Every structure is written in structure tokens, then in C-alpha cells.
Image (cartoon, rainbow over all chains, first blue to last red; front, side, top):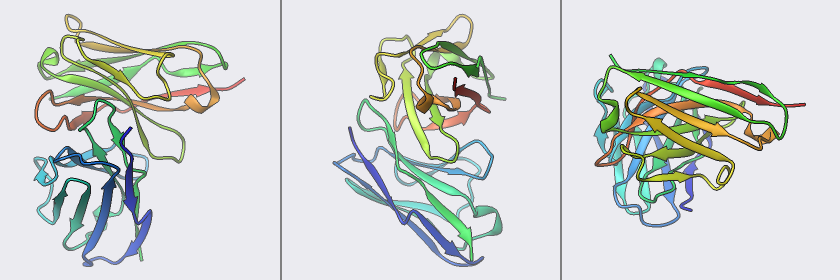
Length: 107
Length: 120
């Protein structure tokens, strides 16, 4: 199975901060990398697919980059509504896997 | 609009069985892969299984392989998850999701979830 490792597991940030979450795959996954946001008690929501394509309706302060094994989710200017847990996911192999999540908390 | 509604969750004893259903509407169900994802209380997301448009391709996470069976009925716009030999560690909220059949297989719509509790 392909393992997805996110770092950090949690972070504290203030409104307006630039936030970066990293996701590393245990093997090359090309561009088969998606990002999801889950707010407390809510259903996960697709943010970015194919490494860098924003899902319709997602604010442009979110961006994704990377290829192969190393990927990044960036929030350019953190807003109050962005405090949530973020998950990366690979769909390269026949067994899809999520990262363990990165919780973004208020500083 | 796209809607996914799970049902069938509940309390079951270890070793028992349960069948989850996912009723879909608002999109061409037969054109999309469908998938199950679960989330244990206080834990992260765990992908469980997916099924292709005509049920040709089916895969399972190692944690459920041999115990869970995914299926779909395109005439009824529905997907199912038959769960057998349930264990306490299967306790979770189970979500169904619509997955793109081409490109990056992203999960663009999710249901609200169905809670499965395995306990004696």
C-alpha cells in the first residue's frame, strides 16, 4: 500500500498567516493527489484535486503544488473559516489512502 | 442538486453483520465510481472500498478485505456495503462519496454519514 504522511500533525496560526501543510507519499504517485477539508463535526469537503486544481467554489487563497512524492497545500492568508483538519489523499494505486490529517488551530 | 443519503447503520455485536445503503440523486449515477470512507470517533479518514461504474473494478482496504462487500444497482441509483464479521475497530461513521471515473478520482460529493457501532 502507498502510505501518505502529513506534516505537521497540527499547527497553530493566526488569521492572516500563510499556512503550509506537507504531504509525502511512500512512492511516486504522479499527480494523483487530492486535498480535503473537514471542519469539526462536518462532512469532508473536496478542496483541490490533481495536485493543484481548485474545486469549484473554493477560495483562491488555497493552492496546491508538488509532484511525485512531495506535495504542499498552502493557504495564503488564513481566514477564520479555514480552521479545520486537512487531509491529503492518493488515488494512484488501486488502494486509495488518506494522510493522517493536519489540524489547523487558532493561535 | 447532488444528494447522497446513507442508511442502515446501528449497533451490532462483534461478529455480527450490517448492510449499509447509499441512495444517490441529482447526477448520472451510472457514470461515476462510488466509494465508502469511514472515520472512527476522534480519528482521521480511512478509505474503505470503491466500485467502478459497471462494477467491473472493485477494491478494498486491507483492514476490511474478506469481510466487507461493496455493490451497486445502477437501476436504483444505489450503492451498498455488506459488512460481516464486524469487530469493535469497525466502529465509525461511514460515508459514501461520488468519485470521478476519470482523471484524479476525486471525491466531490459526500453523504452525511451513517454511524456503525460494534459493541457487546
